[in-house]
Image (cartoon, rainbow, N blue to C red):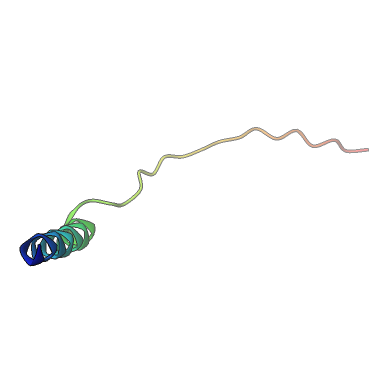
Length: 44
């Protein structure tokens, strides 16, 4: 039973390291695109 908990703990640590590595190495920057919205102003 101790080995199962050790394996699950090791798996959780490896998953956390993989997520942090992907955040630093992976391209997580948002895609930029120009957005134009027409506005009508009512002048009295």
